[in-house]
Length: 397
Image (cartoon, rainbow, N blue to C red; front, side):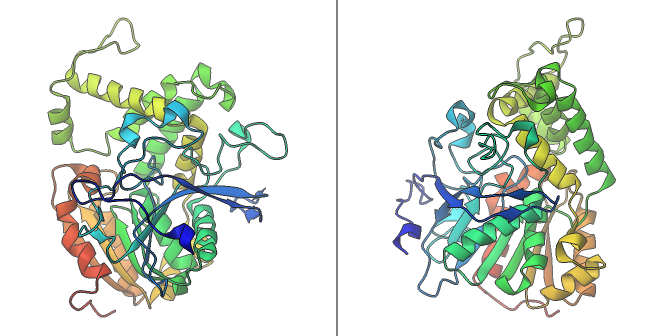
């Protein structure tokens, strides 16, 4: 299958060079967890490295909440996205992790990353055309779950002729999606890597998500989700501020903000009184410029409604994982994480052990908080290599 060979050069640093987004169209229906059905769908995806003759070297990568299928290399634009593909999207979000000799070594592995169903970077979502009306889906796009995206991704895997994945990897909310993969398709993935994620939705996560949903929905320009495409909503800026404070440690936030210039807050009598406030406004403005509000609401909803037990068709979390005894799990915690607290990975580890699943947990010590998984490849590289390349012995279940 020549169409899935990686023909991109490496960049000057030895990483992946220039890449292009691929689009895979499926005419067969996709039944969603909510009960609705998409008559067909499209996945936007990228590939790094080559599929081997046995087709058993594939790593399926799941992106985080507001990420995309563009995980490595440089991609200067995706057809149909226009200005939404901003400068911060050009370099892949895991560029330092993927490539020849890197943590996910493309001399050995073929990495596939795709944009979720409901997303806004090329896969079928609210910005797509509803075939029943000929108009954009907008707010009428159905509710989606991470498990829906997993099943869509496995359609792509099937089309590429891949029977068993060498690994599934997911950071943050992508870690929830890779857990869905593990329990829904246990016979089709050998290794599972969960980075800074949990197996359940915590009350604090649910509160933060609900606050963001209300901030967007109550923006007068939101118009019930019928805003003109490209509208930068104040509610989206506020939503980003609500969530961003869980991504970075307070020490890092203070360091990043110290050179920010004060700017208008949107509250005339208040202004902005501190660089941290300017920094948070800046983060909100950047986000509103690149992400569609209806898509963001769908993905927040997918997070809040995450249900691993239901995805597995099981009666409990332990029962859900009992089908994973032929898999190996590598779990990363970040000691300063306040988005997915380390206790969540501890609970996951304990449940896997109770279910008789082979697993290892690594606690990353970082002052960068949740975002460490994006910024510090050296802290993850040895452990990813240990699992993916089979170096050394693995703990018995």
